Every structure is written in structure tokens, then in C-alpha cells.
Amino acid sequence: MRAYEEFVGLLIGLLSLRLLLLILVGGTALWAAAWYWYPAWIPRRLPRFRFRFRLPRLKKRTRKARHGRTEKPPEKAKRGRKPVPAAAPTDLADRLAAEGRYDEAIRQRLRDTVTDLTHAGVVTPEPGTTAAEITAEAAAGRPAVETALTGATGLFSRVWYGRQRAGASDDERMRHLTAEVREALRSGERR
Image (cartoon, rainbow, N blue to C red; front, top):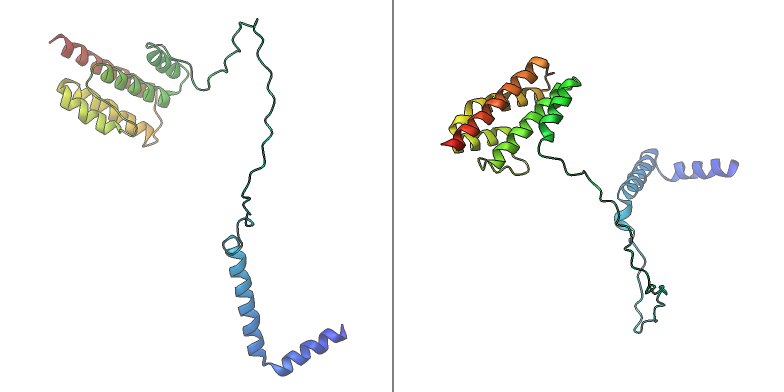
């Protein structure tokens, strides 16, 4: 311990206290910078030496298939959802409403309406299309659906994006508005 004290005393005698503190702060800053940018100044991997000739690779032996076997190996189950029948969205919306999940029921009813508009050739939705864009496109194609669809998308936006809780009356209103849109689509097809 005495040697350490003598060393520190010698340093303080040779260097002023201010200069010693400046060296300590500078060293600390350099250490912190090296720690922060650590991966950048160390090579990511060691250099690889390339051989001019290649060593032969040993191939893994595989069994030959038996000639008498005619069964196909079982296919792997596909990930994702199973195909949904065409009548399922309305049934799903009714089931969600019966469970008291009115927000999701309203969203499902609008999805079902957009699907009907797509099948009728009124709109061509793409990923990222907003409800307002679908309303504008549908109104340009069939003006008869504009009023009901504007009300439906407004209700959807208020509930889904405005985060207002929907109730049974909101779901009933959405059911009525989507029925009006479907009726306007049917009457437009008859003309």
C-alpha cells in the first residue's frame, strides 16, 4: 500500500492536479467511446485463406426407395386458416354481436359489405385502402350506395379508430346500414 501512495504522490508532484484530472476525464471519454462503438473497430471475422484446390466433399448416403411401395408420404399440414364459406362473415358478425363483442361485429359487418361491393365489381380494394377511399370509389361507381355506406364507414371509424365502445344499438344501426347497401346493390343490378 505504501508503494501505491508514493506513486500517487510522485504523480501529483510531477503533474498539477488539474492536468491529472484532465487526463483522467479524457481517458474515461476515450474508454466510453470505444465501449459505445465497440463492434465498428473490431473486425467481424478473421481473414479466411483460400485454397487453390478443393477437398472432395463426402456425400451423405441415402436409402433407395423400395420398388413395391406405392403409398405417398403424408403431406405436411398447411399453416394458416382454413377456407371460409361465403355465408360465414355474416354468421360471424351475428355470433360476435351475440357474445357482446360489438366492436368486432361492426368491423366484420363492414368487411362483409366490402366483400359484396367487390363481388359486384363496384370497388377493387387493395391492402392499405381506407374506409373513406372505399366509400368514395363506391359512390363514384354506384351513387345509390353512397349515403348508407358513408354512415356505415363513419360508424366503423368512430368505433374502431376513435376507440369508442359500441353497444347493441350501434350494431343494429350497422346491420341496417349494410342491409341498405346490399339493397342498393341489388336494385342497381336490376337496371
